[in-house]
Length: 328
Image (cartoon, rainbow, N blue to C red; front, side, top):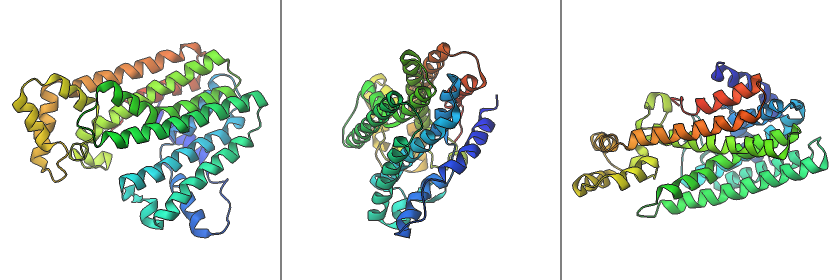
């Protein structure tokens, strides 16, 4: 299966529904700000997973499409606030919400997307017991996501964080919304609690691998493909698997000091970044990060053994592999 092509097809199918729930109302600038991120497109991995999980357990995908939209709205609500907190000025090749509409409107646009998502969930055409489960798993995910985001903010001021704390941060910040979408799709599809849990664990592990590999691309990716300056995560002092591993592995104080001269140096030259990248490779941190992300990918795929073979199961397997095969 060509997972990129399949994602494009599913994204195209979801594009209409994603653009159908935000009506023309006043004030128009808030409506425009609310539409900006979800209407801009993207890979739509999270909503696609909702639909795929529903079909993979034998459910009616049409009942899961609104949930897919809700998950996409929640994801974009977090992006608006994330960009505001980070002070980022560009996303997906466009100016970020707070740059275009101002901080107050950007905050309200995120809040509005969050509210609309729950309005959509409340209108799902599913039995009451399924509704309770969907509400519970989604609300818990948003709560955990907020915790992960704050942990990520807190990490920026710490001298060091251990690897297990970093993994917990990305599990909460990145994985839980993947998992809520996948679990919700399975719930709507009528899966047993055991199967729902397995699919939720699949998405949790996949999300961790996805973020780990994203961090690797942030240091070693091709800027022409990623759209990000290679090494900026080092300049910003961003903790990753590689940094945690290097801290525990490098015993030569002179080597570690040389790396730390560049880490968090916002005006580090390209030559200094290259020195830091070489240190990470020489001590095995790059290889370790790849191996660990690959391990999480394999754990994710193993969780799908509970499903019968189908095109949607294959898509979910390939989606997990895609997390480790991206160049963007």
